[in-house]
Image 1: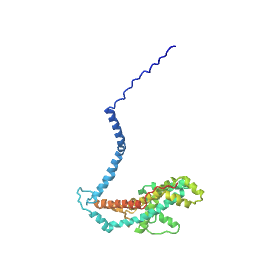
Image 2: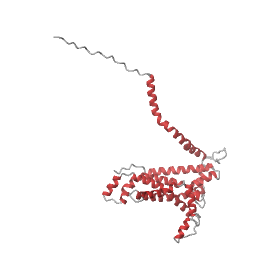
Image 3: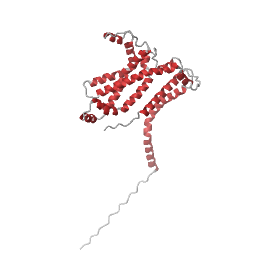
Image 4: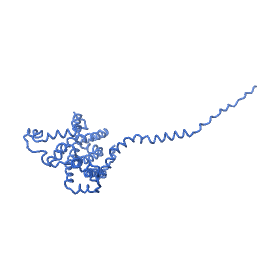
Length: 318
């Protein structure tokens, strides 16, 4: 009987783990540092452009508002708050804010019209794409072109008088001849032009509402008015809030339409038109800069108040 012997398996020598060299540790640190700096590297150019063309000019404007600079000479004398005192104490400078009331009312009208058409055209209707294009088309036209078109529209014996004469309501009234009718006409032009912008904002918000909500509402017998009240209105509240902010700021900074159509005559001078005239017609850049700062502060204050009164809330209808 032979005896079998078992040999123990040969031990495989273990290879030593590679030692961490300072070079590999440095590579890991540099890679981690590069990942941290990558977002800032992508933001460097936009931030540089933003600071150069936004914040630096605003800072210069604030500085000029405390001087009597005429915009041409290199001499600037510090005058303190004298420019701001003139804006709030001289009636001819502060009165232009009341012109913005016409455009503020017009903004409320255009928001209501845009919300109505956005709601109606969000449902399945014939030719709704055609009506969408018709409503949005005026916003695509250049503001200067719109000013010239409506200048001939409102002139004596122009398009409006011709159309009214067809219905036996012809009038020799000068639509741009007195402050009330002129500002009303200009505000109406703003409604015609900017309704399309609010319409697109509202329509996009309405179309983002899940369709299951409409189906459930229809199964429960909800009418279109009830769907608007309980589904559409709560869902688009943030967009309506944004439109209100844009309407108020736009009402205070109206420029191109009244400037092209009347040049600020017959009591149609807006705050921006007055600021431009102060700077480039009367060479009072310091006073014009103070007026621009006041307008900026008013818009920021109104935006802050609106945000406090109507805070953005997450809408959860599901």
